[in-house]
Structures are given as C-alpha cells and as structure tokens.
Amino acid sequence: MKKIDKERVLLAIAAPVLALVAAFVITALVLLATGKEPFGAFGTMFDYGFKSDSQVEIINKATTYYIAGIAVAVGFRMNLFNIGVEGQYRLGAFFAAAVGGAVSLPGFLQIPLIIVVAMTVGAMWAGIAGVLKTSRGVSEVIATIMLNAIALSIVGYLLKDGRLGHLDEAGTSVSTTPLPSSGHLFNFDMGEDVGQIYGFVVLAVIIGVGYWFVLGRTRFGFDLRSVGLSESAATASGVSVKRMVVTSMLISGGLAGLTGLPLLLNDTHAYGADLFPAGIGFTGISVALLGRNNPVGVALAALLWGFLERGSGRLEFEGYDKEIVGVMQGVIVLSVVIAYEVVRRYGLKRQQQKVGEELAAQARTKKEVTA
Image 1 (cartoon, rainbow, N blue to C red):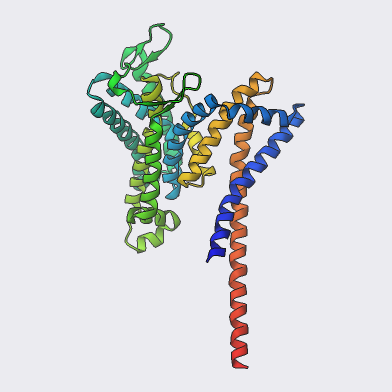
Image 2 (cartoon, helix red, strand yellow):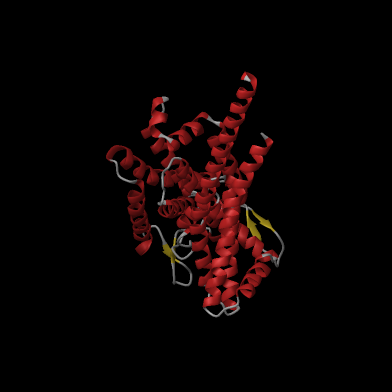
C-alpha cells in the first residue's frame, strides 16, 4: 500500500513539474529565436519576484486568482466548463459595490451584506446557463460566453450617465459610490516599504477548506463527482443529474461573484471598469487546469500566475518584451494538458502491468500447489 501511495504522489507531482519544465524550455527557445538571452530574463524574474514588496503583490493577485480558480474547479468536477466566471465576477462586484455604497451599516453587517450580494448575483447569472442546459440542452460553454458579453453590457449601461455611477474628482473615470469605512476589510500591514496583504486572503483560505470538505467529505460532494464521472451510473444510484447541474452552476457562480471582492473591500472600495482588470475569469480556468482542481494545487498555480505577472513588468523595464510572460503562460496551459495525458496513460500502463504481475504470480502459486 505504501508503494502504491508513493507512486500516486509521484504521478500527481510529475504532471505539473513536466509542464513547468516544458514551458521554461520552450520559452527559452523563443527568447533565443528573438535574439534575447533567456537565463538573464529568468534571473530577472526570480530576483524581482522574491523581493518583499513583490511577494505582497503576488499574494494579493493570487488571492483573486485562487477564488476564480476554485469557481472554475467546481464546474470541472462536474464535467461542466463554466467559461462565464468573467461576467459573473464583474456583475457580482458591480452590484455588491452599488449596494454597499448605497447603504451604511455597522461593519459586522456591511461586509456580510456586500459578500451576500456578490455571491447571489454571481450565482443567479451562472444559474441561467444551468437552467438552459437542463431544460433546453444548450451547451454551458455557449451560454456562459454569451452571458459574459451581456454582463459587461449591463454593467457598462448602468455605469453610464450616472445611473449607478458617478465621475471621480478628476472627472476622468466613472465608478460606483465609494463604500463607507464600515465596508472596508482589514489588511495585514507588512511594513511601510513592503505594502499590505489583503485581509480577504483569510476568506480565500476558508473557501479552499470548504471546497475540500464539501467535495471530498460529504454526500453532496460524492454525488457531484459521480455525475461528473458517469451520468448514467449516478442516475442509477438515484442522483438527479439535472438538479446537480443547476446546483453546481449556482455554486460555481456564487464563488465567481466573490472574485472581485479582494479588490473591492481591500483596495478600490468602488467599482469602475478601469479599476477591475479584465481576464480574471479566464485566468481562473488556467489556474484550475494547472492545479488539477485540487485546493492546494490551485493555490500554488495562483501564486505562480501572480509571480509571472509581477515579473512581466520588470522584464519590460530591463529591455525584454513583457509579452514573453504571456507566451510562457500559454505554453504552461498547453503543456499541462499534454503532461497530464502522458502521466495518465503511464499510470494506466503501470496499473495494467501490476494486474498482469499479480495474475501471473497467482497462476504460479496455483501451479505449485497442484504440483
């Protein structure tokens, strides 16, 4: 049993390691092809990425990416591809900021209200795709892509012309009404020259623990995973596949709605199109793939993504093209898909070899006994 466990651990580690090694090798070749020195670029990224102020920014970025990754992972465990995290995150952050800016309650009520609004809006928006899939057979990929565009249009419309937004003091950008001080979440002050770590990182850890417990230690999690593995087998055991699809999309969307709250509660304290970066939802897909839907793996992948993005700015300052980081990220995602498939096939081959060895050993034993 110990040997089998060791092999499983090694196989689980082998895929992401192979993917990272392949990504660095391919990126190095790209740099060489463009006349750049690869080791200098990697050295710059590592030196800059491990500075104290860089680590704070990496953790803050990773907090947002981690929540987005977990939101995507919930769908992946059900064989659902929730590509709509981007729209769910923006819509949830916008309405949470609008409601939070419109009321002023004590902190122990204000912050939970903002969180509940963000989760509810995100869940409802994702639930539309779930209902369309179960009632009309519409692919969740198509539905969530369309819902992304609609969400961005709704937010842009409501911010325009002062409907739910107003110009800042400089008159250059539109945002929602700033949150009152009771809607500001605490930060961890790491020093004047280092910066502050978002207090929302604590809630991100709680989300990760909850994800692990619900999916790995509850009947609901077992049903969800069983539907993802085999709908027919799940149906035969009494699980309602349609109910699980809708429920999974609601949970995924609810978590996606929380994605923008680290920025809202700990930094910007208002929603504006230029305050919230685009592409976080799609980053969550990459992070979930790299982390293999495991809460610890997703956390490590989120930190890696934050590290790469932090290093891109320094590369540009040093004369390198910052797009090289985008190349590296894309190669990592492709390498992950290939590496996991290679490792999966190797694992199946090893299992077949073990079964063959055990059968051969049993046959020899039986022959010796009869002899």
